[in-house]
Image: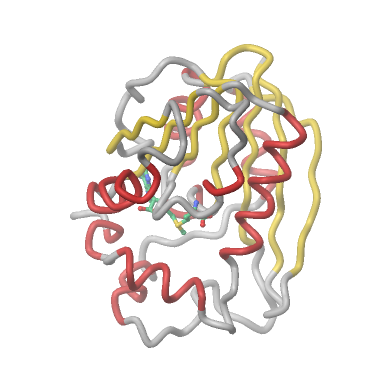
Amino acid sequence: MQNPWLNIPLSEYESHMALPRVDQAAMTAAEFAAALSLFTPESVAVIGCAGGNGFDAIPASTLRVVGVDINPDYVSLTAERYMGRISGLEFHVADIQSDVLPFTPVDLIYASLVFEYVALAESLENLARVCRPGGHLVTLLQLPSATMGALTPSPYGSIQLLTPLMRLVPPSELASLAESVGFQLESSKTVTIKSGKSFVIQAYCRL
Ligand SMILES: C[S@@+](CC[C@H](N)C(=O)[O-])C[C@H]1O[C@@H](n2cnc3c(N)ncnc32)[C@H](O)[C@@H]1O
């Protein structure tokens, strides 16, 4: 079966994320900015980069920026948006659960709202290979809500294609699998946005 992300136009995904009742894009961009300022990486990889949400906050001191996504259209649109504005930019179309990621290891990996859609163990093994020892992995997971479904209802029909694929990952499950491939949990915090949805942000150090 084809991955449903290949059938969701970027315009629909971004319009969905910008709906007032979803409103997650600003939060995920803010968490990326916070990770950049905490770890001041020379190189960063954004896994599941979609349209480059948060790329505006990448400082000039970050010399290499790697965007990875399974959807080739997202990658070309994001390249068009940011080529020439951010130096050291490279993009890869890859499925993080099955492809060996074709770039040299980076100081920081940011993986926001992507583990909900992949085989976790395989993806973490692949990510461990592209994080340099002493580097960091920052993850952002959606938590279940007592009052809201995992996928917010949307006028953008293609978003519903994600229903059979999406699985909310318990942060403890991520931490335990991450540890098994060499990522040590350093910090964890919960953020709740206006809609009432909560998210966990974990930072790991690559041993
Ligand atoms: C929910 S969006 C998150 C976008 C962005 N990281 C954010 O937090 O705003 C998930 C992104 O991960 C990508 N994605 C999903 N499965 C993937 C896979 N197996 N390999 C690579 N990218 C994947 C999707 O195409 C999409 O761009």
